[in-house]
Image 1 (spheres, one colour):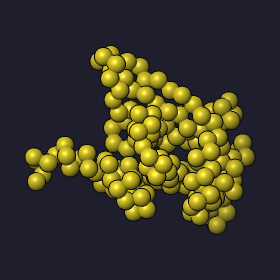
Image 2 (cartoon, rainbow, N blue to C red; image 1 turned 90 degrees about the vertical axis):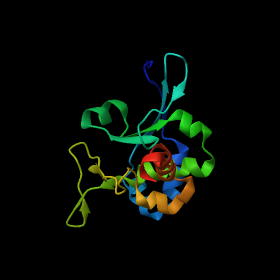
Image 3 (cartoon, helix red, strand yellow; image 1 turned 45 degrees about the horizontal axis):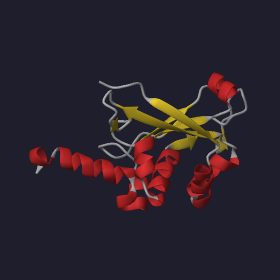
Image 4 (tube, rainbow, N blue to C red; image 1 turned 30 degrees about the vertical axis):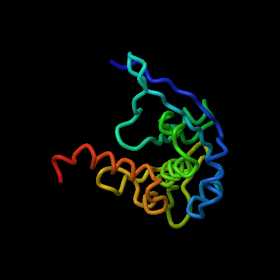
Length: 164
């Protein structure tokens, strides 16, 4: 039996700015002033045991609707499994943020960004390009520190007696 998940919000987190600054392929997110929030999610059983908040990767990305952007002043919410993030070292944390940011794409038409009615650039999410879920660009950059590697390791552990 699970208790309701608990959520803690952090608006304009410094770690996002830092990861964007360190990665040229993410520069457009800063150029178009995309507003971010990290929402830490804790999932606890009725016995008080903290369990993973999500099925595979320790994060999920949500692009806010026009109404939510207006009310919250946030364009993108990144939900992160708090227990995973708390136990991660700095490079693993960076890999989680990079993986989340790397799936956000600014829509273009004829080489120019598309803007929505509220003046915010149109965003879409890339689909995972790894079969078991995840993003190869993040896995390639962070290797064993990436959440994709951890998900793969867990997958091979879970199915070891079946697959090998």
